[in-house]
View 1 (cartoon, helix red, strand yellow):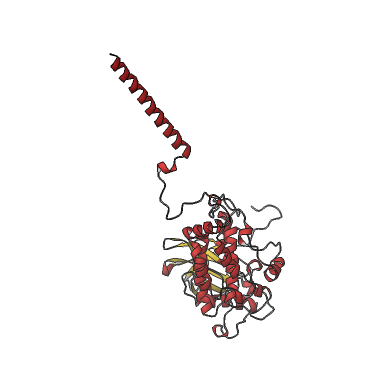
View 2: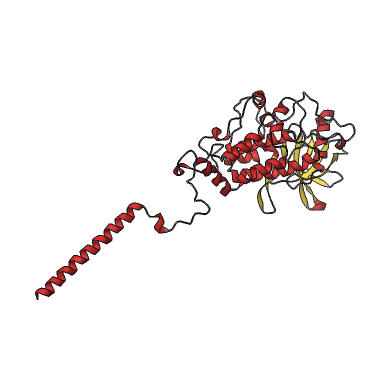
Length: 388
């Protein structure tokens, strides 16, 4: 029973409802946002579970929002890359005119939730995820589709075909598509002076309301990678407007200064810096180019070699330390530094080679003493025998 002064929330009208002629039965709500809600539903004829996104009925009269919703569905339905969430069908419910999108149901958590729960990710985990995301965006860009709202919440990490950290790109609701890809009457939100997106991750040109192309998504991906590796954004700000101003006016904090206790490869820092260039002409020009630039730093062996090679130019080898992933549950702060790993080509140390030098000297002294005592005893025995 509700307490005095509290009201029971009205039951969701879609839960338990069959839609589209009984093709789907909605089971539960699994997410909600400003535009609509996402439900888990079963599709008995296909023997599968799906996710159904339904635009809030109260927004059905907003032409700008319904156009955005249709744009998301149309953009996603054209994409077939394995790292883009699959759209099975979309349209308008006959019962009440609500707009819907039927998508594949994903199990896992998004990148933002992962970093918050586990702490900053090591390059060998974060970079392969972003490389795959680049593949999904490259397909979209080649079709004239710019995402325009790339952020960690729109990168969903799931398990697929035995693979972990398999990313799926979500939410093309702000996607910019070409005129030829839109249905007649749809609104195209590309007018200069209009700002859409998430302030923490938007490109300088997006923050200024300029016309966007694929390079804007590349900038956003670089911000995502930066935060995944450090647990922090490349700018210090407190409000959305401050983030917008810093994207436009301020240079990002260098990667190795953001978390001084963690040493990243200089080459990786340079890759991210280029992708975060204020001028789109100075960034990587395609998602594939960005992926190829960061790919070498996505394996532990290559990353360790790059870090130690850079460090030995300025400090003794004994101080060189590779990136250490944060321990689970440590929040956004980096974990303790690990001891340096042996070089890949170095021979595995034996028990004898691991013995401290002081022990070796002590053993030699002991052996020499035993031999001296044995020699003295032998000399005494010989003298006794000669006297007889």
